[in-house]
Image (cartoon, rainbow, N blue to C red; front, side, top):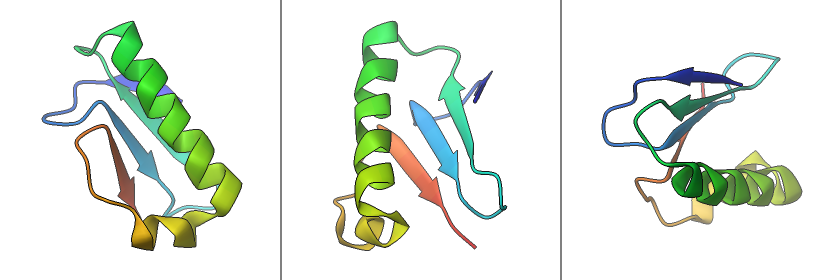
Length: 65
């Protein structure tokens, strides 16, 4: 997990590498980070393939290769 300025997103989950990386937006509030972490828990619970059926939102962006 790292912090970086993200345009239009609160968090970015990159699953293209063996070790997944979560980036949280430096300009977003702690409350927004909590919502993004809850979304992340859903992805971890149901697997990456669950993101295929998810509704895109600006809270968490999933990057896959």
